[in-house]
Length: 141
Image (spheres, one colour):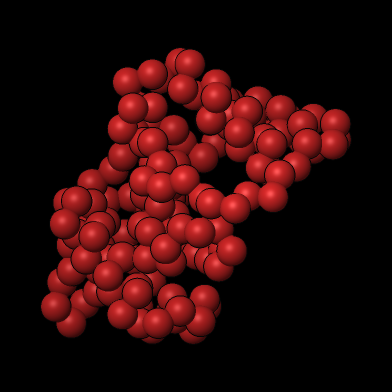
């Protein structure tokens, strides 16, 4: 089951957060082909978002071929993504690194920036496709 966490201050559309979190759960093996996603009603009750937002996210996942809606039954995962199981030894190393980063005083945004910079070094082909669509204006920092 996916435990959606919506960050209303992130600047990321709510439906996109649901799509990203579902993809992450699939990629980590927390959701496997054949697993049922929570109903729109369950997501609404857990997150207090508009039902149409949940349905938009599920339609996007369906358009991408990751899930399929079965009339009267629900929405089910169709295929897996990647090969990064939740119990991977690499995850344990990353957990240790994140703990050290926090202990050294880095904020979440600092860690995300560092990790993104490293990803762009090791996966440059992806960096060109994931550039932000807009630049925030009026950043006081």
